[in-house]
Image 1 (spheres, one colour):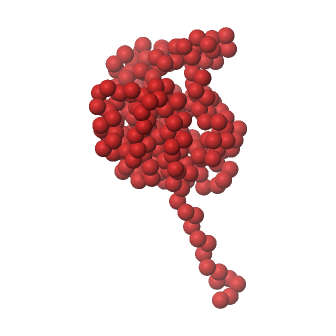
Image 2 (image 1 turned 180 degrees about the horizontal axis):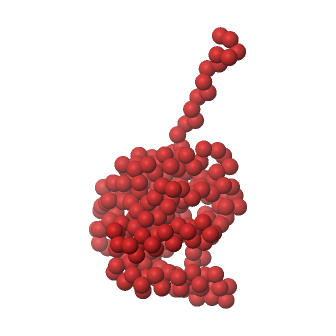
Image 3 (image 1 turned 90 degrees about the vertical axis):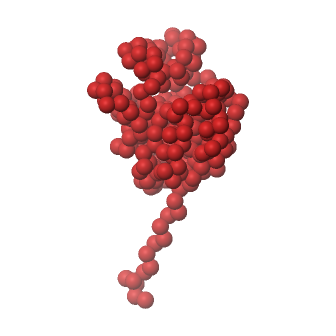
Length: 242
């Protein structure tokens, strides 16, 4: 064999992706969520429940690889799932969000080199109404300005880097945003063009404008240092509208 006829380099082994799905009374949507993850061929689905009483657990057990109970706080649920996960990549995916068919390949593409530590998906809403399209566009623009992304955009990260930066800081109101900021310092964090599809159900239940005002009121509190303690006390309400 001549020097120019070297065998091709072997392709890198595919990354093992573990998905952590926190739930709290998500019986109406958790089945579709988990089905979308299965269709995208992720390697492991872990559901961590926060005390559901509506049939969420039964539906989750039918499709997830493992289901855990006992953590009542959202970010404690995500940390618990991360501790139990076996994958090289952790994907934090909310139960009222649908994962795209090409989501796995998008993650693998974003993590092609070791300096790329994680990323998040673009946001769209499962509603044809223009106001939701505008809201999603503003959220994606906000992310590129350095505010976000937040958990409903399916943040993913190398497991080793997640452990290195200390996971989610559960005492913070916006521990998802705080994690993203630490990941930016740890390596290249990628905002994907591929979108996840979030349900508009909570917005419709509370009211579109009331939900919007609640979100931006929380952001103002979060970025005003004197309001940090009050923000954490208020943050538990955010779960009902995110």
